[in-house]
Image (cartoon, rainbow, N blue to C red; front, side, top):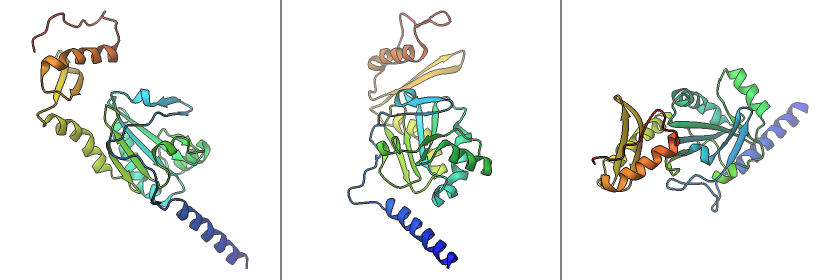
Length: 228
């Protein structure tokens, strides 16, 4: 009798979970082409907001350690995290939906996943991106616009292909311009502009350089005259 009661409770819990994440006709989720929402989320290492993601590729993955699809995806998530964790042009945010830091940390220790994550126990951040279903992936370009989304999966190869392909895809168009700054054959900055002429993009590029590196010109100086 106790065994039957346990099975009944387990099945009811699973059914409730399934009902919760069944897509509805009026369901909400950000799509490719949408801007990243304004958000702020914290962990013991600090706080991250949309502003911190400016001029970076932002890879945001929502997961739960109790979700079977998420558990299957963790090897890909871990691989992506290790590929980009030291890349200054990419920021990876792993956000645990409806879980506490303690719950996620315990699972990561058990599975030996050494990854920084953010807990979102009340879905405050998740609700800005979607209203149901995990895992969910949102990849934004450096302008803060979503260029790739994935639902109920984490396709690492598709994600890795999308980041460099954004650059090659835009620069192959006749109406875009790529500006690159170098110092002693090392690239120091780059930016894409929706205009094909240097005369209209060089000054905005200098301004973006100032915004990135600040006004201190002890170690560098923007030229007063340039040939474009």
